[in-house]
Length: 278
Length: 338
Image 1 (tube, rainbow over the protein chains, first blue to last red):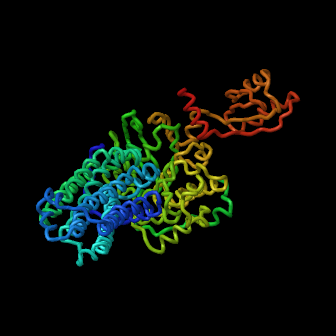
Image 2 (tube, helix red, strand yellow):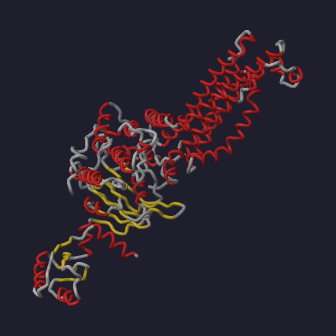
């Protein structure tokens, strides 16, 4: 018997994954330090801020966008054509400018939860007990990935639903029609946002398995995540302009990258490596 | 073994309905057997060519100072760490290849209780049970029974966050027993417990091994407890086995004869020590603050020793024979190294 001897492959048990996941979700739900920021930040970013901006755009004297429109991508300029100034402002703000927020939030939430997975267990001194349970390494890894993924996607989708209601509530008197959801937005939220969440946790779970504390995991992982967030901010609105096909294409690419990261992390994850750092 | 107080443990450990039927070794056969078990870390070698044989249904005391390699040994035997050299068979399984199957049959109490503070005591037990694939009313009853047994029934639905060290320990012990494991690794099981709970845990360990055929590996710094419970002992230092075997046999090999303590109400004089040392079948004699301590070949030689002392009008307030055991062996081994 040596450290390199590979154990035989066994059937993957979703029931075990569900049990680990249920324990983690139940415990996290009771942690105000985690839950409050996780609810407040998305509420502000996804509902409060867009609704406030929209309301401001509706109520204030609209600025002259003709100068700006000349510099906007053709796709946006086409959609603004034929609208009055107030309508243009609402479409621009609610239809395009807030889009990056819907990618930042799932990545932030998934990364924050992922940082807590293994490093948090170490901090709480619960990891060793977990490692002594009859859980296969793959099952444990998948449970931790889902622990970060599901709340991030859930919050993102819930936030979008609330945003749509708020945006249409704000825009209806001016537009006289529903502004959202559009096909592009739907594709962004359903396909790209989960992919971005998976990308964030794909990095952070790996970091968390090596870090001693959640803080260390956040610092190490943050250095990688921040450039991705900045890139997301820069590109999300543009992708919406390019149409559904582009949104889905970008989503597919991000999904592939995320799955590659998660799969790689799962392959490298061993009980031995984690226990050796206890 | 003193009986546990009735208010703490009025009944034996509840018997569960675990899913896998025990198929482990019969009593007397090795539950654990390892040869040359070795594990290195960047900071050094934690376990260094350790050989162990633990009979099923017995209690092994795994002893040593902090950092001796006890916890790493447990992790290796439970398949949490992989050895860099050597091999182990635990309950007939290879911990590396069959780790999950093995851990289904083992229960581990880690040095830190390892409870999630954000869950209640009952939730901690039931979450672990669910991960083990145990669900339903019978497991819930078992969790309740175990929490009751360890005096935590009234706190079962409180978050563990506010628990004392002893309370956490009790919940963790209950959790380690939930699936009625064939092999228990207990790391400092009585640490932080009050005297009544300590007695209860010791009684439980004895019951598990003697009456129910469970194998127990006990890591503790409380040598008296280990001495009461252990069938065999292993002393580790810097990952190496210093001594291994049955405490009584190890002691007999080191200190042949019977130890006798004589209470004279004062330290024995040089003359008295010389008198005793020259008696037939006395191996040695040394002064103590209350009198003297000597070693005789057998119990039958004790009356002659007492008679020789009393013959000179000396007052002998008490005599006791002393059987050396695990505690003496432990300190002797370590003193021999220092």
